[in-house]
Image (cartoon, rainbow, N blue to C red; front, side, top):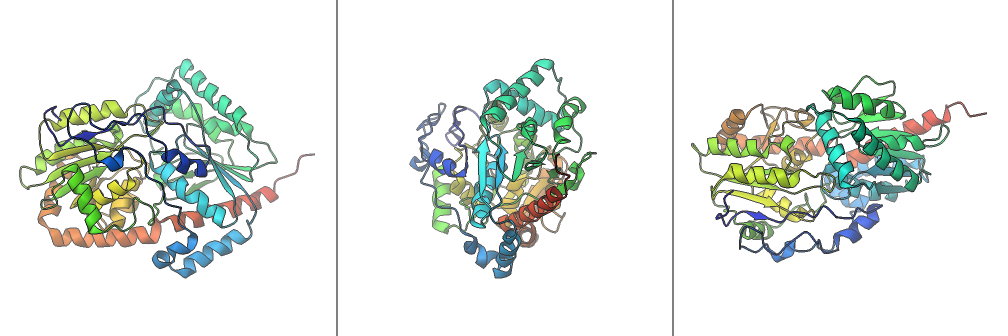
Length: 468
């Protein structure tokens, strides 16, 4: 986007955000001023809304009974029954970032709900330098199939930080869950007769870079089980593999119902015109999310239908590429006044919610995708959704029933044009998408899966031969 466009608003996150050690600390962190935010964008004079300058006081997490109106009493009774045999058993969750991305959002809700069910759950976040997160980002891209030359130096840095975290952490719980590749080598803390260890992989492993996968695979094979987000992500491993769909929390700030007055206020803050069609993609500024491709599809569709494009997202503390990709998006947008680019702080869940609810059509044109919780969010809000047929997205979008799947820039442009000119069809797939999420991808269903798996692993642990 050109420097004379007053409608682009950015506020790039600081790379120095300190991660919390458990879910309770996450709330305290979000109350702190963010040193990387400024009152105005460096390239524009328009001030950011005052509400974005520092994180708001987070609301208390929902209690289990708060979900009754959405999922019904029988679902809550099932969760309490499943948790009965696990009462007092403990879980430890470990990942690489406390803010930014779907994993952190899920853990922020999953941890307190499991604890409420008398299954005490602790969440810790690994630490590392920029060199570590640059390597793990390269691993992330490579596991999605991108080319990468794995060097001994990269292996050494990866193992060094894993060892530092392994020595710092204690693993005294009954179940230890390690999320994604960044902390996978923590398995070396496993005791033969101790906890059950599970590797939860949230990314697309269907066509991994061979060198990177062969480096990580020996660690994965030491776990008791692995969990993937789509059937196509399963690998040939000597351990059991389970299919867990990721989920959203319908009561979170990002997904709860909002009054129309608040939706209007957010649109006014960002210069979004609700009297005209709004096409939106919400995602990190990541090449695998293909925001440049979304700009190209919008420009093709704009030749035939009037619309605005909103690209709303931000970064994660373990993703060092975001600023570079954001600049690529601005360059692709050029001086089009109807393209609105929002690089938002991680505490802007309500603003994201409002933008999604104001949107006419929501797009997720990923090149690779683990699951795509932004698709889940859009479907939950009943929005007609266009998404790439990659990763776990086809588990959410049944073509022309709960949304539409695309394979190219041109296909995305066609579907934008079609949905904007066929509102009845758009409305019907939006309603079907909402029901699909309600049945399969809500937080209560995720809690149920974790309880079932924990019971299975506890039974398997009881059958292990005891050390002499």
